[in-house]
Length: 220
Image 1 (tube, rainbow, N blue to C red):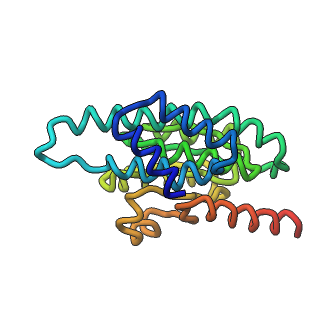
Image 2: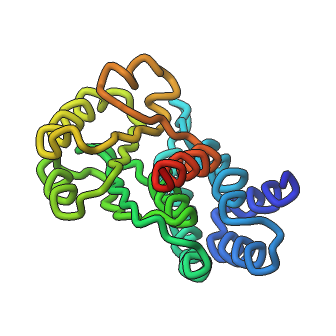
C-alpha cells in the first residue's frame, strides 16, 4: 500500500483534486486496494499530514481547508461503489446513528466510519458535524438504533460530549450503546469511561469484530 499512498500524496500535496479523485477511483475499480484500505492507509495519513498548523505558516489554514475538501470529495466519489457492495452484503437489521457534538466540525473520520458500518451490513444514519443535543436525541427517538456513534477530535469538546451522552441516555432509557471515537480519546483514554462511553472504535477491524459480536448475539 505504501506506493499507492505515496502516489496519492504527490497529488494531494499539490492540491490536485482531479488527480486525487482519478487515482482513487481507478484504484478501487481495478482492485488495487479496497475501500477500507483507501480510507485507513491513504486518506487517514493524508488527513494527519494537515492536522496541525505551525505558528509561522500563514498559508496553513486555507491549505488545510483545501485538502480537507479534497478528501471529502474523494469519499463522495467512492460512494457509488459503497452502494454496489452493499447489495452483496447480508443486512443485520441493526441501525447506527452517527453524529458529532455541538461545535465539532471535524466530521471526515466519522464519515469514513459510517461507510465502514455500511460495508458490514449495518444501517448507517449519518447526521454529521456540529449537531445540537436535542436533534441527536430526536433522531435516536425516531430511528431507534442499537448504537449511537460519536466522534470527537477537539478534546475541549469532551464536556459537551458528556452532556450529549447524558441526553441520549435520558431519552433512550439506557437501552442504547454509545460508541466513541476520534483523536480526542486517543490522546486521553481515561476520558472515554469518564464521559460514559460503552465501546471505543478506531479501525475497520474494530467494526468487523463488533459485527461478529452482534451476529453471535442474534444467533443465540
